[in-house]
Image (cartoon, rainbow, N blue to C red):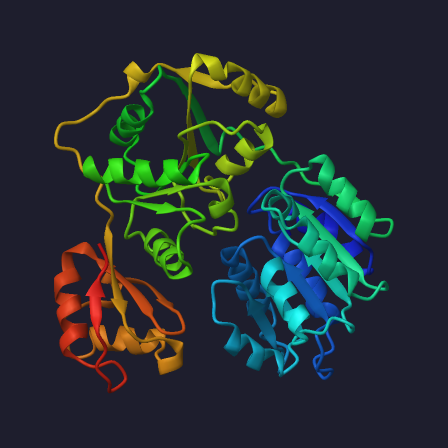
Length: 434
């Protein structure tokens, strides 16, 4: 077990309320998921557990983990309810009284107001990434949801950071919670952290120099503002880099597409805000770059913790101007160790350098509702063709779309096979994402 699982699960299984601070990637989802499933009465068709998350991406990730752990329990019904999706199918799913609901506060509240969601039989309430939900302005929605839940319930509150508002929320909704703090700092041997002092107007130029010097196969770049994300992404494209932006102004379909491309290694660089990046589960992320420092040292630690996971080595690079020295000092004080500061002149650039992602994503105009499965797509690409399966990467299936990553060298051939052939006996429109 991870430290957060070892410390929290005994109390969860005893039915106690918990207030837990743990960094991203700590294994907390499995801890509360096992607690939920341990107490679940699968033969009682009512909503027994509710998990609130700040973003749809995190909600989908949490649902996936609960479903994985629930495979051994027959007839377990787990439903994800988030904004950005049509409400009609959700209404139909709620009529079947799901055992566990995972969702975002806004859409959960909307269903409660419509009378399509009843929480009077709730046993466990989980607030995941509670600090980010408060940052996003969900405090009032959360309290209105909690007001209609039974008083005799178990409440589990998980947060990566520990601002004063978290303690206030805990006092209002929990009963004598067990307070658990899991070490939130990162091992310097696992995450190599380097700061670069820059002059005004040198951020984009320095970022490009970092990419030339370190050549990361996957890189998450943090900006503090949505507009900055978009502008920086466009600037990187002009420099020949395959970069994608993730921020709150994107439509849900666009967000899904961006995350699919980055996760399946069809794009090397993801430029995101803190809110948009919360809940991302990207395996083998080689580096995190802070285009701008966060004013909160806890957020900084949370950002860099997205690399160096599962025992892999990671790299965290940060830029700062002399006027931002106080932010660097705050990070040093928080992590109780000095940071390494290097000169930008040590970054070596190369002529005609390109950071090309190894994969290309093909988008298929058919998904779950068309009964398309990953095996069908793999079969269409490899049956009676000379394409080896090892050159085909991650396959993601959504309601009406499917995405398959293929190695760049076979992208044209794979596109031709899928466009001219059939998947599960049917023809689908297929296109290559840029």
